[in-house]
Image 1 (cartoon, rainbow, N blue to C red):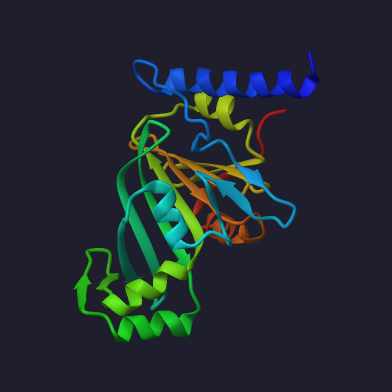
Image 2 (cartoon, rainbow, N blue to C red):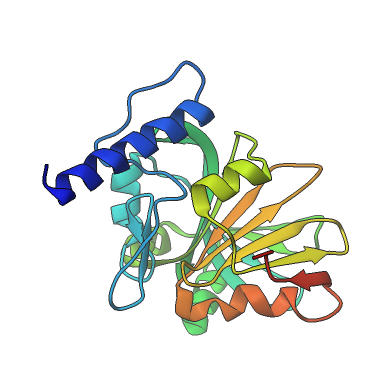
Length: 230
């Protein structure tokens, strides 16, 4: 039998086995699965996951692929940093329920202008501000590129499952709070294992991985930083 055919059958089988672990009752596997461990980085260094290519796919394309609109807001941190996020609650991707937060790639002048045109500002407990955007700005955002994904599955994944599905991380960093980060810089992936809550997956362009790594290695944030055992 042709080697490519064998590899193709093996790939589908592994996906089916993984889903049988994660999904109760065993559900039909999508022809083009949108699963958190299926990450492909192209020759230009742009990663694709869930049918989205960071740095290339637009919000409109993402909405079309998910068949959901999501809730879009602009957030301003106490440090006056601006970010626009699209929040998809209880989204089903290949049968796995998860919350997904999508950060859009916009320049600071664009973000400041949208803040000034905002319809309503709410103060959050964290000290950040949440801004409801104007309709014209919401239309403009359809063309904005996806920059960063945060994926929070409803299914709890233990360390063994994560290792089986994602492989060994390049590095593990544990925060003082006990949250452990498994880092896969070549994939642009950070998996945060929370002993008291859900796992959080962050996806960025590998060339921008320093944005994730820097806060974790600042000294005050990290309790320990170790490479995985050989």
